[in-house]
Image 1 (cartoon, helix red, strand yellow):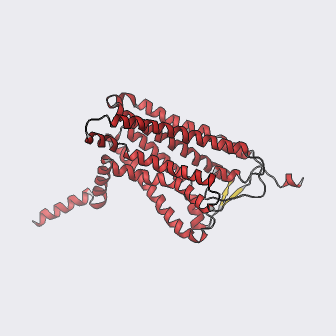
Image 2 (cartoon, rainbow, N blue to C red; image 1 turned 90 degrees about the vertical axis):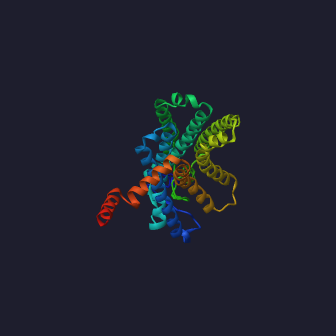
Image 3 (cartoon, rainbow, N blue to C red; image 1 turned 90 degrees about the horizontal axis):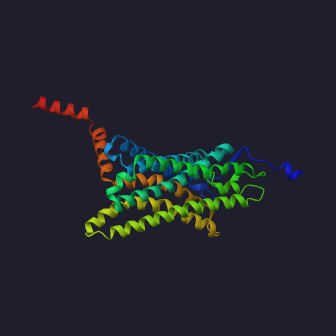
Length: 331
């Protein structure tokens, strides 16, 4: 009887512990995370704005890049504000509904990003292996349907998670040893057998990461075969150069995922703050680096950023014209 009284379906609030063991560094972490978050917002919004106003960038690759930036914005904004609340304001409480919503967006955005990286690999494959059919294959209709399928797959796979957790009985413990509501961190608080939740999470992760990564690798095998058939070295470097940004984006996304999974499964002696920091890197690094990498490697984006910066920040057109008038009057 007492056991049933101490068990309820879901706590009203969860307590996000943050990063246990690094409490003395919270102010430094808060500063670093704030800079990273603001830089991510500026970079991704700038990328979206440039692609929106520059009609020469209205091409399949940049449409996919717009989708990737939108997902990165949603991914970072679903976690970082609460983390900054913990570090800056010591605000650890989060309502259960908000926790489940955060969990849904975190994992859904990660699945969408994986799908977008696969779509961008397909884009590079068509551009290099079938350049004459590029425009006829990657039509707006196909790009729109790829985007819809990306969102639909993530929503379909992640919608069961909150409902599965709501069915679990929870005891008095409501402390999550994490900075955000990660699925397994919440499941560990349940007072019942969570085998199905564990299996579901592992199967989805292996299905998404394994299948998407396998097709990405296969695409690049075909791309490399096509590139090495080119006659000149210059043509080879140019073809590979168009893939450089995408390769960096793939490594930025998948390496932290794989390392975090390996450490979580096999690194029993690794301190918990290392686990949590790696999980934070996995969520915050792609939104930070993707706009920087694509902006640095894409000449059209780089030139547009320079023109906007020089025209509107260094010397606005009206100021420049007035200066020229004043100078002519003096002479």
